[in-house]
Image (cartoon, rainbow, N blue to C red):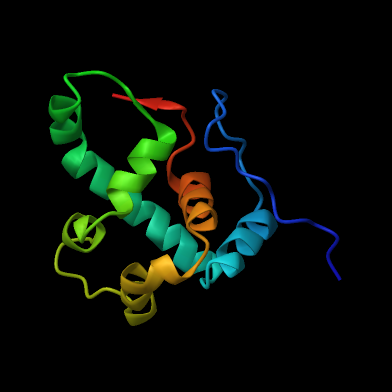
Amino acid sequence: MSKTKCPKVNLKSRDMLPKYSDEELGLLAGRVGLTLEQLKTVGEMANRTYQAIGYDLAQANDGNQMKREEIVEVVLDCNYMEEHGRYGRTPLDPVIKEWLHGKWKYNLNHVYQAVAAVAFPYYLYE
């Protein structure tokens, strides 16, 4: 039995987030109803979504940098990840699709922490 505890992901920390082990990420994933692989997929989708909407975010924010917690919140909002996060026309995993629509049933701070841990290690984004 593993003695690894679920890591605390400090979204407000000005430090770069550490590289979490697969075991730690698996614990974060389980806390929000995903497997490790599904969380990694969500992280990739979140990163692609940020790449797609980042310029618009910068424009809306008058070119000012945005904090990690703000980026995570915007990327997870609405249907941005479904729209921008997939590879081309690849069908979305039904579990991930359902999770994207129902993620709010989990502790929102846990959702933000899990996504930040796999997709947004830096404190500020431009």
